[in-house]
Length: 295
Image 1 (cartoon, one colour):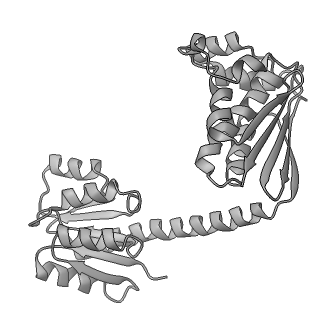
Image 2 (cartoon, helix red, strand yellow):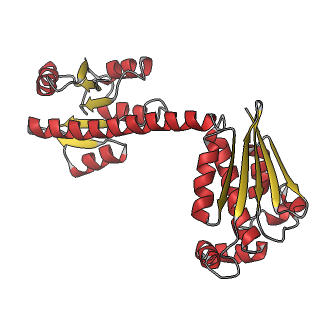
């Protein structure tokens, strides 16, 4: 698919020069005479443009206002914007870059430099397209899964699997945090025996992750694993997480407790239960948790 570029400038001659420089490179070029005209195009056709080449000083709506609108619109915020302008004071350049411009090109500039910068932005766009397509294929393949079993022991493994499981679900962002909480808990509290108070102290001292990594390598814990069973049922995804620890008094963590409100830990299970999953229940002494996510 050809890259679609919107060129915005209130000087017709500049539009012609830019279009001529980019001609013959496989791009589809559309122009707008000022920021307002460009915004009407972008807001009305948000999926039809890949890149904006933007002048800064224009009537009706200047380039900075258009840039701010682009970067605060969820449909457009990832689109690269290259500013090309005579406003080249250091504070103006900083303002443009801080507002989200991909590059700030000061006039007069070498046309070949502009072409090279556009090519760099196009590489980013095409890499993003490839990633998006790979993600779509990955998610589709996950949806074909019937049953799976995973075994892991580290924080890295827990976080990686949390991301994987989130992609199985209708709203990945909603469940990713919940999966991270449950799987990390199975490692630290379950297999490694880090208590609530120990974690609180480690969090406050900034040593929590280092201590988890250290304990994973100790002979006492080295062979312990967390097992996750995944089942794809017609109406829901079901997960069973089992660690090799002694369990814990899970009931008091199922709801928010005012006594723990100011602790750096202790709210994850309640948040996961209320916000991330359709169902969450602990079994027996607490080293097994069952999770359901309706489709």
